[in-house]
Length: 403
Image (cartoon, rainbow, N blue to C red; front, side, top):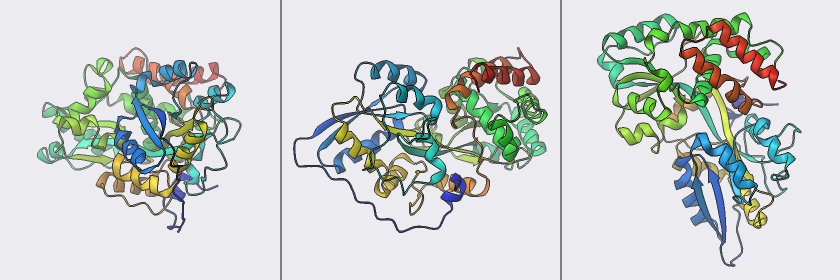
């Protein structure tokens, strides 16, 4: 089976995908739920292009999305919705009969094979169309680096020196959003890629415990950064972290590619902010890459047929290009997509050269990973537990969930 990395660097394949058309009957109004504000322009355009449907998008705060969606789906809910990637999210809805294996009308052959697990449940069946290949890396303020004479660090010694210069200039070297547990899970995943790379394989597959020496060493490396992170990290929210790097109050953050889009807090704070991307400069130098989730049809909807036709369109090359143009992220379509943004191009290069192939967060154990890592990492940055204790708590947490 091809990996995500292999699929994204594969030769362009001439694949013709027919654009779905609808009858000339009155438009069917479809409700689509998402946590991704940046997709609103995309769905406005899709709604214009597809005859017979009027797609109404409802955006819910990312941290409240899972719980609100769960309640809504017990009472009818949206016709289509975005799901988090992996079986740990999907299984509950499969069991409840809310999602069904995708219709034969949905042609997935144009998607990168490496993203398919985002729409698969633990039974191995595919229930949704994966969307958005994301990367997690360091975002840094290029103007601030330039003013302080800091070159992009490529190893731990250079990284520490960069943080020292930033701190001496009265800036926060590395801003951490400690109030958001999911953001800390994301940060930890970026550390896994930067420090462990392929060595994460045995841990992600649960052959080795999170208390392994190599994992503890990774956490101890982060522990050595604590003098350079924001002093009130435990109280910092995700938006505030991004505002600080946009304004040059912070030199670096660890964040996703989505924060480079025009709809992001960084761009809303300063449209002219010069932001650079770089891998976490650990010994492995990998970049964490994953599919952000899957588009799903609510099987209990009264508009299943129309919803399935929209779902089929999300697997087309035309949709993939619209996604790249209007969302500003990487599409899950495997070839023939033109990327205009320097950030999209750079992220695609990261994946081609150094994409992390073994996933914990955003992999099959995605939801459980956030639930276990997030709150325990909060204790860690607050100084309540050591790196070794954090590793033990993570291992114990996964075992308690049967993982």
